[in-house]
Amino acid sequence: MSEILANSKPADPGDGLAALEARRSTAESFGIPLAVLAELTHRCPLQCPYCSNPVELDRAGSELSTEEWKKVLSELAEIGVLQIHFSGGEPTARKDLVELVRHASDVGLYSNLITSAVLLTREKLSALADAGLCHVQISFQGNEPSVADRVAGLKQSHQKKLEAARWTREVDLPLTVNAVMHRQNLHQLSDIIQMAVDLDADRLEVANVQYYGWALKNRAALMPTLAQIEETSRIVEEAQTRLKGILAIDYVVPDYYALRPKKCMGGWGRQFFNISPAGKVLPCHAAESITGLQFESVRSNHSIAWIWQNSEAFNRYRGTAWMPEPCKSCEFREIDFGGCRCQAFALTGDAGNTDPACTLSPKHEEIFRQAECEAAADNNRFVYRNFAGGTLETGGGDGA
Amino acid sequence: MAGPRNISVSETSRPVLPRHAKLKFDETRQVWVILAPERVLAPDEIAVEVLKLCDGVRSVGAMIDELAAKYAAPREAIATDVVAMLQDLADKGFLTQAREKTS
Image: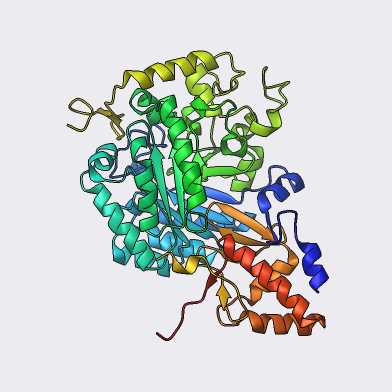
């Protein structure tokens, strides 16, 4: 037995664990994803200027019903999905959230709630825990109200988030703090890290804004300076070392300042899909921003597995056959899959182009220089996210 | 507050998977998995066998006894390997200590 134990240890010393992702991608290409994002609604009490929802939001009337979501959850579990992330908009704006979480538990899905937390009460959190919720992720816009409430476009929101984070731990649910970072809050990063420790979070996501949809509209107000990014990386690295075993920190760099584009969604149609409030099955939450692609719905007569395997939208940018130069002959084509389709579309007008975040893109230099100029110009006025297509912040844009 | 997160595994520990980590058999892929936020891990067969015994009630010592009996192997060798494996899992955040029921 002791030999079996010793021999069974993988290269990474002795924990007996391997990431399933690697195993799966070689075993069955385009197998059903392990995790799916369920955007229950686009309704949200916050108006963050970098919201990842499309600019064209789904109205309440088009949302899937409780029964439709339950059917979707059952089907996902049946085809091999293991984790469900309940997101939005604000998922707690759905009155049936507890029922949906319970159903996810009943069919064996690991459930995660991605929330702004401002609508949560202690009773609601307790009910969600009883329904089998496995994990809570709360977004923060800063470490104190003057910045955080302004970014969120909602008074008292920071205070409510702190309260909800404490209740989350009181009902013994594990907590991830998600901090979306940009030029106007990066100076608070050290304090945000300490806030996550004080809130007894297990994980902190330091996620720099990714610039499509609402965030692209607000790029001039959000784009960090190069000096800020360098400082951020230094702070994160120092904290990762210091807080080992206390707080795990995941760090997402802004791809405008990277040399290589990100492997967006693990590659189009390879590891991930999400379901929009109205039931569209999408390769990523921003995919509807790409015009000219038809996305199938769970309300169609196709199964979710069929849509994943066979629909035109998923197959359009799968693999490498669709690639133009410079991707086509690039040695990194199987590593980053040409970057992000939504970003390529937003910045070049063609989702089939190389993501301009890549230094090999002919557009890279122009776009990077533009972003640098925007960051230096320091125009801080937000366009707030709402169903009316956005509202310009009143006043000078410094919260005054 | 962050107390139970860094456990030190000994024969008297009664480890259990934390609430955010779930051990489950994945019928589709025919493999045991640990589900955690943003991660799915595939423990090897031995790790699975040990993890199944981590119920927060059994002590590590009792687990070692069971495994030594099952595999008719010297207890000492099993003990070293099991404690090391559990400590690694604990360091990665996949094991915690069962809460004391009294005081």
